[in-house]
Length: 268
Image (cartoon, rainbow, N blue to C red; front, side):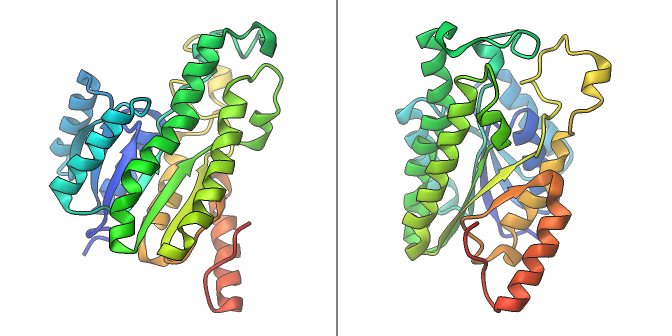
């Protein structure tokens, strides 16, 4: 039996980057995964490639900025699967959308256009809220479920020229901690997962040098922790902030703390 054979998961932004890496990792362990993204040819191609590899991927058209689209997707999962075990909030856009030269020419916040600020916040922060709000009733009905919200290094939240990306991720972290407490009485866990450094994804400008790209993390770094968070071993784990780059150290510390306490970890 595959480790995650009975797990039904929705991963947003799963056609590329971190989302695609997490979806592949879950699928490889036997999970059924809804690849949630805007209805474009890339969604169809991603699902087709997974199915060619005999993986249980399914398309789920979803625009995280549109409440009606999000609710329609949640209703579709209810009708299709009857429930859900794991929701991964990952869909997001980066600094390239407001400043294509953000790495070499940081832009002060007062030069950021209001439209660019609003669009990024609508995707990276409000999108997490809308998606969680729509899918949580599935968890409440079952009195169980897991949410993983993807975030980034806290240094990014204070870095020069990183408005609005930094605030969007800081907001997502605060939202996640409140979600964890709101859902704790219902047996639903909420955890944060981040790569631990810049990753080689579409958020990095295409003209970035090969030498600079050599120092980027692979999106696959997200695989082992997301599989753990979907597995029986993560039962009761909530309010945690897990850095994928430091995964083995976190897992060792977690295992030791759980042995010492005889139960789930407290939030950190």
